[in-house]
Amino acid sequence: MVRSPSIWGLCFALGFGVETNAAEQPAAASVATEAARAPEGAIERAKALATSARDWCGENLSKEALSAMIDRAEAAGRRAWMGATEATQGHLASTLGLRRYVSPPDSGEAGGWARLDPQSHPLSNRIVLLVHGLDEPGNVWDDLAPELARAGHTVVRFDYPNDQALADSADALASALRDLRAVHGVASVSIVGHSMGGLIARDVLTRPDYYDGHTRGHTRLPELDHVICVASPHHGCGLTPMRFVIELRDQICRWVESGCSTSAILGGYADGDGEAGRDLSPGSAYLVELDARRALRETDAARVTNIVAEYRPVTAGQCKAVIESSLAQSLLSPEVRQAVREWCESKLHDLGDGIVSGGSLEWSQAGDVAYIPGDHRSVLHRCAITQAAHELVASPAPEPSGIAVILDRLSDTPTGIGSRQ
Image 1: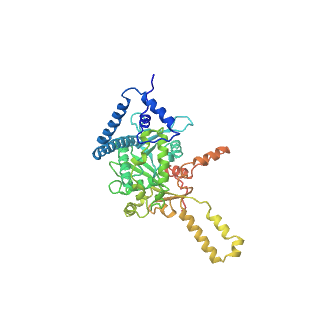
Image 2: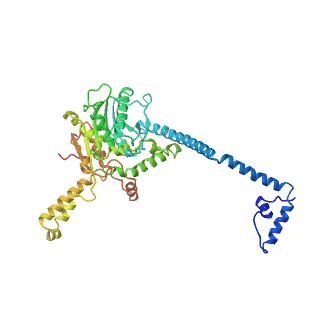
Image 3: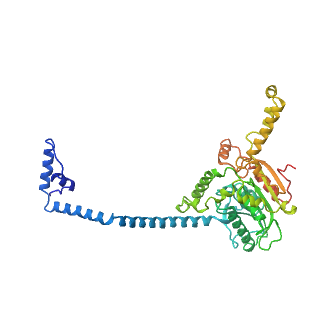
């Protein structure tokens, strides 16, 4: 059987503008001989193929044709993007709203979260509602929720698109509170808000459209037994420009929790456009308006607790011991030592909880203030690294410092743990 030559081989053999030297002539002659043995019509077919390719390029690569191809590609990309974002928004919607903490009866196993079902799991008329903060996947409640349940509380968490404007998040929380009253028969709620969640609770409490500063006497909203703000940036947070770090953590956690579903990949796009970060910037229009609202009455302020976390890599006592040491006394005058002491105390206060400064953690309208050791998140949630370290030495990790304060304030006979009065 005679093998058909390649087009390039034919071109070479036919001498399409290619010259050969003496050393190359045997090879060229061999190719020419092969071409000569080609089936009849091979050259004509090659020419026809070249002509067809030239005509296709002329028809399809014209300016008009290229423009049409680009338009089709853009339309296809737009359809793919819309489909992906719709899937992501659908997945996000399935994770938002109200969920109840359900623990297995008579077992030491950890509980889980379930959608509210008034038929199979009716709520009691008093609940504790947990409201998370900025870019929080929800595991900040992993230590607090079981303790609240063991203390006899019905625990519900509220999840919302935490990158949207804070006023929109407050609207969503108010809507959830109305549902708790109308659909689930909840008469009174104690809200625990961590970080930005405390600001959202404060917004709902003081906004004229909702509670207007009154914790009692509303027909469509449940009564507020207690509002507890934990490590909340009442006057903003200067680290909001770096929020992309916790946004990344939030989206990775949510993606893993979804079973690495493709519908959860664009979660950061669907949960807001970064308005929350702008609202949390010190001096933002949102914070100015929030501060300008009328003060709470004494009876309502008494139901508000502001928990201030104090992260101290070194304590004021340790600083004082160094400043008052014999070496410092021999080198520094009393005036200089006093100035250094005041500087240290100021910097420790400014450090706040490591994320929110000390001044921003304060809210003068809160009737009850508790000060606890710990950083912004560890006051409620055990760090995985810390837990692993304690497991290595077979020692239980200490309970987050904020849990005891919250349990105390929600009890019938609070003792005032953490107060400095």
